[in-house]
Length: 330
Image: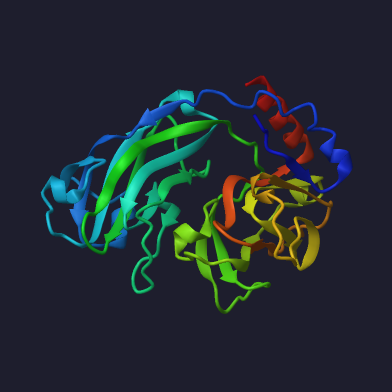
């Protein structure tokens, strides 16, 4: 079995990993979410809130076409809500929300925070009916051992609609990376070779951009994140874990090139899409008490594109060592 390669800015750091990549797989803990969910047709931003009272909503089975649950012939917007208490076995784990297949477009919230989207809502409608929904849950959003509210906004253009099929669950992908700054979640995104502050969309990371309204797009695009950092953290040796990217990438911080993987300026593919991108950030590169601009510029030559798999975030070199030691023990 081929194991993923690890790309690090700085050959000296790569040595730390050469003995640490075996035995990373483990059986994931999981909690099923199949069964009865609260449901209401229509559209209201307040329905994502943890304080909203959904006691009068109907209940329907998930997964199932909503046409088979009493809403035959309905096309348009609808929301699902479910209250979930997570067991302590999921504490300190890297958690994924799997929602199977949704027809056509969805937007997902946990405890009022958006964690993912597939497809694009009107007026720039783009279906994602054939995309499997797997959303990484930011660690600061979920509350293990307490109640959590999952809210799913759905738009169906025609024919069947809703959370129609597949496995519906929260599951673990192993040890939670000890990020000082998690970068899972919403980024600014625009097509082209550089960030355009006057013309960008919001996009979820990690996820392929084809499932977020950029179907069939190949070429250059830029992910941008504004970042504040403490003095204590800025002075340390930091590692940015950028997950897996399809295909080539370049990392810039405050306009300065930090590192990259692949032939960014060529229409050439060496199978780099399956390689983790991890980059050393020199001390002082991130400015404490100021707004920093982090850019990941991507060149996709075909097929899916973008930052499509995590983990994504910033940790110290010491945290990085401990993380891989923990992965080896699993």
